[in-house]
Length: 365
Image (cartoon, rainbow, N blue to C red):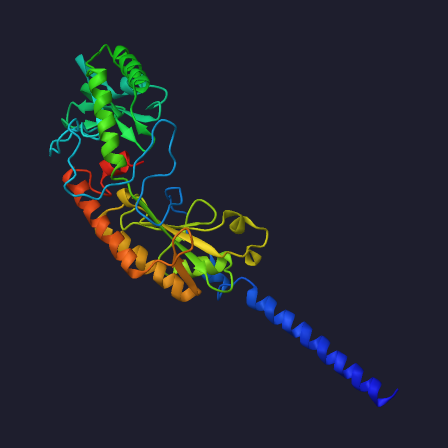
């Protein structure tokens, strides 16, 4: 074999090795980033969380139903409250509240047992899309409460929520509420007293208008700058900030300070990536941080923690915080959203519907 042939063979081998090495390097460079240690990426116990992904601006719930169009929220602290809404009051009647519920009192000739009341409850506690609740006036405590076996009650009240994120209570739903409340009262030989339907439906529409104008949900999108992320890598970095696994694959939440309350923030990514046979090879290029504003107490500093979490994840995961169109979100934009949020919080406070309160969680659900 001539020297030329040997030289060409060596050169060809070098070229082939270079190509193979380059392809290997590119494959590793573009492979999804993996967690540092398997133990760090184990998901924590599931935590309940609200559904949905939202635009990175303050706006209403996108899951609308026909005939119940929502409007963009107004951030005017001087916005007049709807005239038909009940004025804020310190007086409360158990879980039901005249601020957001239509309440039909049920008078009794004597006392009724909790067992009888439970047996008389409607099979479904809804009128259309609106929750229905029954409460009794406990003979011993004098408090309104859901019926409890073994207790006795001197009166009852049946209520239906006037509005939620599906819209306002309509005439058909009110009629269904009346039928269920009447059947409950008849079973206990009670006499219900129903408010005028047209007045209550009008009040429900005004409450819905107020709620839809102040229903804000917010989200940021975190996009990978270079290499994609694996689900384990996302979970590892998010868990360092306090996030735990949610009940939906590809969903994590930042729990509230008090057990049983809605999570402060949600973090979601591609569900299919989380369910893949080999999640380590799944490539995630973006994830969403979300905040359901009316569901979280402002004392939890939800927006500030959302900004801090987004910045920390972007820094650690080599990402950039953007809106849904991929435009980077600048500090001044986030500052402006923060100002709008403070005005929204103040308005909800003045209407006795403070963010994170039981009434707000019911109304904005």
